[in-house]
Length: 219
Image (cartoon, rainbow, N blue to C red; front, side, top):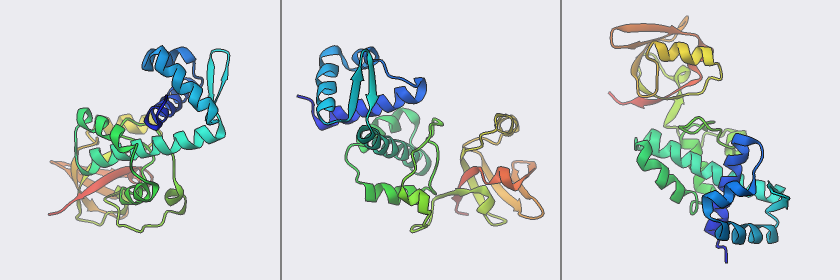
């Protein structure tokens, strides 16, 4: 008999395979979970109207997609929390995020999301499904992670992640050392944002600075 944890793991897998490939073949699930477990879990998911089966393909229903979305959101926000705030390495935070996704309720998730500044991608660059807190963008808690553009002059910070969709901008920033983990000082805010790291000063357009998310370092 499939339990709820197995169903949630299957939903998570379905979402991620569909995200990468656009479709889910039953064979992929059998390879990952084993034929017997996959058959049992899929049968239970059909009974719960979470999926539809058609030939060799598996499709999420609206109910299944909504539930999978919440699981993925919990997992990827857990990754951001463990990586950005607790500074736990990738090898350690991934198993912890897998445990986290099964027991944290939506109220806690909304608080974590707000605390992190409503991040849109996980540390691996995958999209984080938005929640109600993201849509309303109410700053109930002071975020730990903020856009570089919002920092005051003189503030010290460490880059956590960069969300720009421009590969050219990302490559240019990376080439000059503006990467996650870089510690910097906001040298000035006007007329352009100037940051300093080491002996280097760099002027940034505000549209670029708002896509660079940082964690403030207390002096």
